[in-house]
Image (cartoon, rainbow, N blue to C red; front, side, top):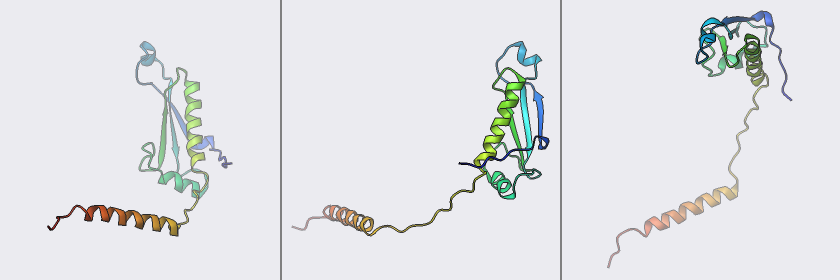
Length: 134
């Protein structure tokens, strides 16, 4: 079970903006899209979670460490606001748990033997392609 970290609403800026794409006159008149801005470095999240968030190679995270999520899938501002919050929470929860450290292992004896047998068989095939001395 993943730990759930709650993002403090006071640390998030929400702005209503006009949506892009088709929609007729409604797109030109109504600011139904939502832009969510979350400053990762200044947040109250645990230090390890903040570092893992900043280490993500996500184009939504600026060089200054501000996460910008734009939600414009729905026709209403409320639905887009909920969608932006859900996406922020999913991103934070994805890095909430530390990744499991990989323990390097060595190849088994049998796998080494199979590899060497395959190499020997291939070498034998290639050796048979040489010139034939008569």
